[in-house]
Image 1 (tube, rainbow over the protein chains, first blue to last red):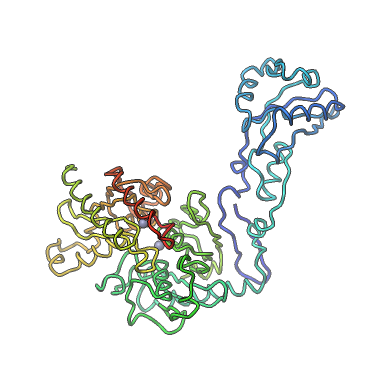
Image 2: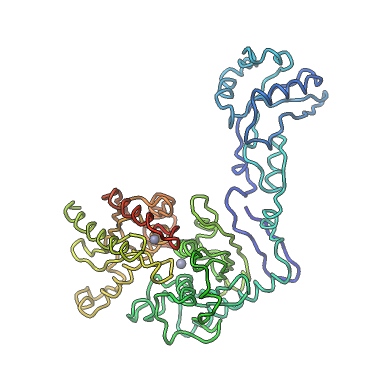
Length: 352
Length: 178
Ligand SMILES: [Zn+2]
Ligand SMILES: [Zn+2]
């Protein structure tokens, strides 16, 4: 699902956390059993293909080629795909049940009268039923049966992270440096979980909130009681800080608030841009979040509820919801999908 | 569990869900009950009021519970060697809709052992509908213990409340069932 590009003069690599459907593995290809026959004479090729296209079309399997050339020591021959179980499951099962006689029972049907004598040697082959999304999937899939590939530029750019320019990389690194600095600003409070978060307006690239992790730090922000709240993860606090920039929020930060981003808990004071915010948009629409460590499942879902636009994180975490335990950003079942990139200043983040 | 007790707490949870509906919030309500006899706290959705999409009933109830158990009278009644967080390991969450993935993660982090709920949450449910986060044993050491669930309580009532909400004009909350 991921590919890493080693940039020059940079100590870290960016990797997109993509859904399993992008994985360059056999599972993503969805190989299915199919029935192929040898073409007795290649001069019948067009007649056979016409017959199959009309009578047994591969609706939704346009990437699968209907014919392949097989080269052996004694020469070469053409093989045509008659049925694919993803479309003609019943037919494939029937053929499989009596293939030991080297007979394809379906060819005895009236429907096949026209082409029957053109086909011989029935065989079960495996065919990738999933349209290849990446070049790697294409290269893997065509080893099973010939398929076609239409490259989607935006997917390729995600897979190899080529959508970022060197200037973008510098911006990403700068924001992650602020997140690291924010995490370190909690050191005198003995945070135990050293995590920093920076929330950035994607359009202007300005920092609108920063925070560290407060789960082990006694404070009154959430409940008014001076206790370490186990759910005050950095991301949860960050979301509330963002709500404050829009005139909402439910925590009371008082003396924990700092005046500059990176010094600790910070949020940008209500700006005209925010008050004008479209009422139908969610609080994190158009915002990018930088976090030194992969957020836990709770925090990932909180970001999804807030409709975050994009997330960059440094190091992976076992209970993380953006690639490790789950990939909440890429689940078809959920109503908001967004891109997550990992690996930003990975070593530095890991040392926190 | 005694079904009368269950019904009593679920009814309370529904009262808070109805409160939420009156306030223009997604109608989900919950109560957090200690040792099946004492209500620690209640909660209802406050997402619109706070503009904070994490203010689901369950998280509101957990915050309220922390206020309760750290009060002087409560602290005195607890065993000496208990931290305030230990109380949650003896609690049941009663909630009108299956907790979402976020709230399920929060309850595991709080070590709440059991959640009783009304209808399924087909869009965000973390207790079986979208993910089975409640029972994922691989996360025991990193996230917290698994949660037992007991769903399907007064399902129709829970769904009716949600339908009432979506019938109203609520563009801002269209996508936050829970
Ligand atoms: Zn978290
Ligand atoms: Zn929830």
